[in-house]
Image (cartoon, rainbow, N blue to C red; front, side, top):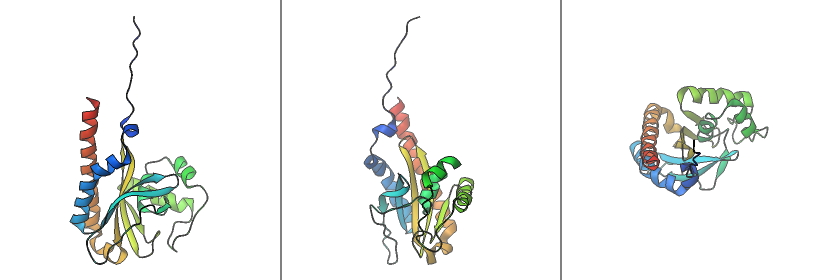
Amino acid sequence: DTATTEIYPLSLHDALPISDVVELARPLLEQLSATVNETVSLARASGTQLAIVHYVVAPRELRVVPRMGLNLPLYSTSGGRALLALESDEDVQLLVGDAWQELTDKTVKTLPQLMALIAEVRSSGLAIDRGETLEGITTLAVAIDTLFGRFSISLLVPGARFAQHEARYRKEIITCKEALLREIGKITAVEKR
């Protein structure tokens, strides 16, 4: 028996900068925004906050425009809760801690409330923030868990318009998630060769 040593490259997660993930996701985010005529964001967890890394603003009069660098608590945002749903219950508790910031009168204020919402996300694959983070704004999000990291894709919609189109928004954001996972799958297949 001769011992062999294999050298493994860094994982794709280590090798692919956020800007590359944004470039990969951009056409699909633009397509989602154009299809539903709403703002779309791509975000990731940064400690206990949700950090937006890219967004596409809908070209309509009444629209939501996020601020880059605006970090919001994971527990109050749909994107954050979609990402938290990928974690174990114990890790959610560790990530969220005991500091609950009330952003609006609808913000989640306790761990049991949050865990009930996360259970819904785990069941449906979709997270909804109905004015819990920003008054009058409803967001719908999905999470993607890839070799490049975990990201959320969110639709940011004025609350008055959301209920009217909710079924369509749900369908289109799932379609975008599936398309993005297929694109990432193509790249990881090439990288594995």
